[in-house]
Amino acid sequence: MSTVQDIEFKDAAARAADAFAGNPQLPEDGEMVGEKMVLNMGPSHPATHGVLRIILELDGEIISKAVPDVGYLHRGDEKIAENMTYNQFIPYTDRLDYLAPLANNVAYVMAVEKLLGIEKQIPERCQYIRVICCELGRIQAHLLGLGAFAMDVGALTVFLHTFTEREKIYNLCESLTGARFTTSYTRVGGLSRDIPPGWVEQLRQFCDEVVVNFDESEQLLTRNPIFVDRTKGLGVISKEMAIDYGLSGPNLRGSGVDHDLRKKSPYLVYDRMEFDVPIGSVGDCYDRYLVRMEEMRQSVRIIRQCLDQLPGGPINVSDGKIVLPPKDKVLTKMEELIHQFMLVTQGQNAPAGEVYFGAENPKGELGFYICSKGGGTPFRMKIRSPSFVNLSVLAELLPGHMMSDTVAVLGSLDFVMGECDR
Image (cartoon, rainbow, N blue to C red; front, top):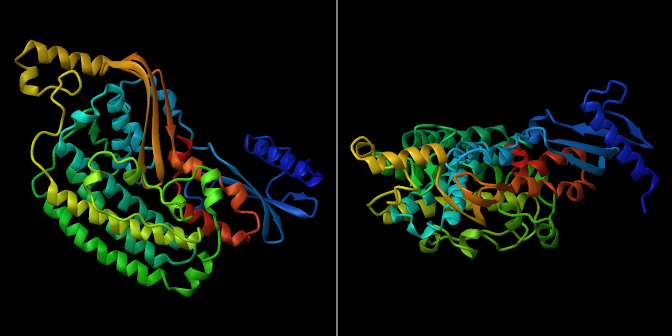
């Protein structure tokens, strides 16, 4: 049964939403609901890590209700996919969690390869390179996430430390893919290009340097009394709440749930890698910070194993109906010319069916559900974006906290609105 205040708050939230649609007769921030005040945090706010709006009901400085309002960055990616061949959609995956575009590329093409039934034909060298890409993306995303989190609660120096290392990853991405930010590196059935000369040595050097940065960042934060006070005991997500809301990634593991798709449902060559899955015990902001710090160390450990085991050989499947044939053959042989023409104009001829593939991305489980009626484009596509699912817990998580704690809770959830809204 709704109370009068519940009804008034819902009414105020609806009117606030209408006000954003341009109705000048409706109130701005600061509207009183009974003895409480409604405050809009966002969509333009430095601590919302994108265009997220949260309608907060405040009793003094204590949050009594919170309504997250998403969708300001909605671009209709899933609908766009229905009008593109499978390879043409790869650049759109860069724009999901744009802090880890390489990992998004890998997750998407693996879903398509599952639909085509070629996931076991992917060459070993390609699989190892893809794992390296995924773990580089994890380090890349966590570095910025932790730097921004620290900056939100007042520790600017950490952001400068983490961004310095992230810039080195950009340089590695540029050497590998030709682009620093929007990589579009993978292809259905393989990769767009092989590792350039000297890249392995550059990556080994980066691994040696970045672990030093981890130590420096931990010295600045882990026992910093201000950071500990701002994060410990705040934003506690119990195991039950994390599971009920479908959280994944570090936010789930920070609550003590031992679930990592790289261990539970191994893909690529993760079953050959030795690494630990850090889990928290309390489920607060501080635990989520510690989990991400350790995850980066484990990612470096995985990358080093991949470099040690990296085999030679091709990086693409040999099927000319899946990947573009070599250019010299296209220019000299009719069959390869026909294959290239068909692939570019119509895409891979996928069978009818439905598949789902989920990868352990930096933010959590990034999943692609593809419904095919045959042909080179999907009939329907659904993207399971972990940021969207993780943000759903805010309505239950924020009430009872102070207004100033909101930025710490948001920073600890580490979301990206490009992925949330799609």
